[in-house]
Length: 412
Image 1 (spheres, rainbow, N blue to C red):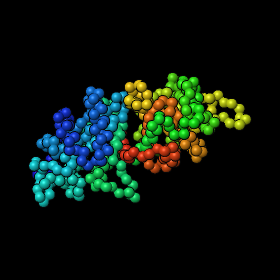
Image 2: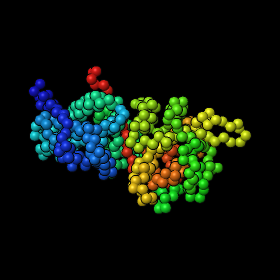
Image 3: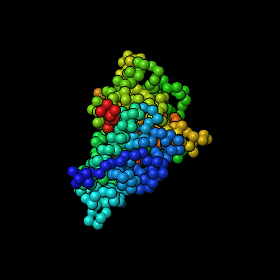
Image 4: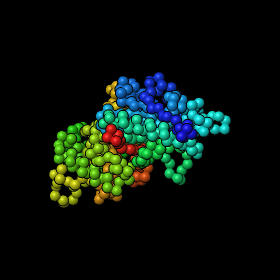
């Protein structure tokens, strides 16, 4: 019994103070890419700047007695509204060097140095890692459940397919935490971007008269973009105040998920209603940029009422503000347009509609004086990637997204 107790010291879990967090951030990012470290830092800076520190849950777990240098760190961000929390970072506070004088010698190497933070085959290290991870997750999941969270998302450096290799073994080791904490891989996303030219013009939008989405409130305003004759689709703005249209839209989104190549495992965790609600609670939510996509009436077919036409698919855009050198306004509310979701129903796939929708999106970017279009796509969704690259979108970076439901631990 004494030996077992020595090999399994008690675990302490606590909430970090601001000073402890500042200390931890100086060392804990060494095993993730500079891009990932920059993303996490920017998110933390934005929360601190907005004085919304109550949205941050910063926990650490270490073998007793409590010591920062021996601890496993988890930084989690709660949403402003909604039920989805985001893990920003999990790793040792000192991934490369730790000192554990309170841990038996079974947790040191031949030179007397601690093996905490080193991903090796040492069974004692593996046991310690598992116990710290379990303790940290138990405390974190209880906090999140009490705050009304039902789902946790987590983005890491990309987990590469077997045909590719990592430049850094340390980066690979840092990516093992999601599996250790029993998160499921949702998909690996490729982030793409397209910028307007130096004159504020968007690709293929400088020689024709625009065709705004049917029924759009700004339809009377004209700008330079492709003529309507080039398209066999119409974009109908969604009327969020019309319950029947909302129902049509949700059913259409559900149809586009059939045999979708875009992060299919997500459906195990979130319903269509959950996903749509998540889009609506995002800071960049732009209700006037949600569209039902229709085929145009052609030939001698009888004219249909707009709502009666079958939906080809759906389109959801978001807007991010930013100062713009292209106009006199100090801030452009739509400096960056984000393609949040574009889906096509199965029976309409393979007709080239994806590229047409992308051309219509550049129209919208032109009309809103946007400077950049951004999106994320599952790296396995090759048809969508082809449509995006066809208009000149370029890769920015990749990340792997993970998910896990939050269990109601209060009933356990």
